[in-house]
Image (cartoon, rainbow, N blue to C red):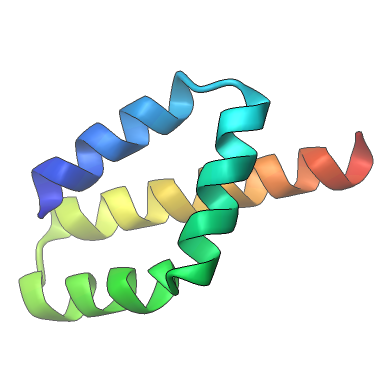
Length: 69
């Protein structure tokens, strides 16, 4: 799971704004935050926690840029 999240974060980073919008809307509807919380509880992996934080940080930065743009 952690490797999947690492790859996912890399792909998001390389995506354009339109694709990020579609992705983040879809993951919101799919309740990704619950999945990420469960991943952190189950794996107890420091690397996993770091990748979840990275995902959340990048998403938050993107959302802020959309609100100001």
